[in-house]
Length: 268
Image 1: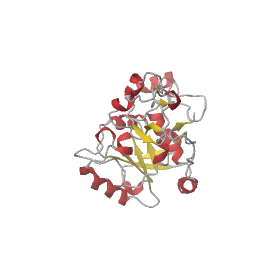
Image 2: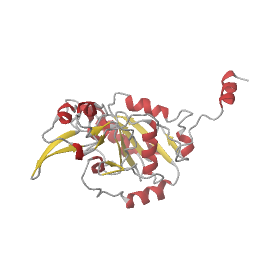
Image 3: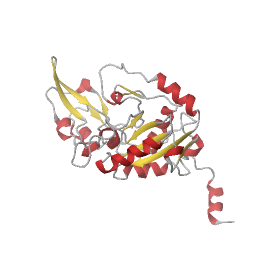
Image 4: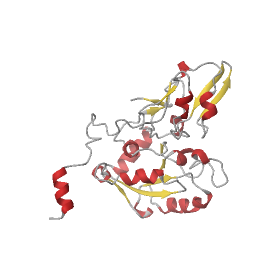
């Protein structure tokens, strides 16, 4: 008997029972995106906005004075804002499941007015049921998202058990999963891949770079991620998002899990 077979039998099942069991938290202790508590903000304080490299935090002037704005779609989870905030208005959290159907749900708002796109949800469910094939394209990433994507097929996460598979050919793909800030050099190959996919086809922006361009947005080599290039059906911020966040977003797309973020508010 090969030594690795004996080792596997001795260790038993390594695959996580999540998301089959609600109490099986696979990301215990994992640091997520900062949690925002605007009622704690000090007047005229700009510490977090001044230190935010990708511009996820800003200051907006209105009739009632200045107001802090937060766009999770630009956040790279560097945690600098939580370190400079004097009153814990922005604090560290374990909020990691940020996959959303609409880009505006990643922007913090006062009221929870946004709702999932029910028509799109029903269409996806009727087309794919419990199976999905993914074509991944690296459109100029640092390989951080790719390192997390690779973990999806290891024994612990075992993406295949959920009926979700990666395919090397766009002609067999249901979903185009894009990582990276979409450099000008990768724009045409990305569009060719999308056009080679059969209808119906869907697009997922994986990682902050694909969602908004990340820290390099508007630079000499790229614009602002997938914005204005392809119609995006699912946004997953994070630098990079962890494997569980990726799985949760895929299940939200398939209507097999609930979206947890609406209007920038994390519901869990």
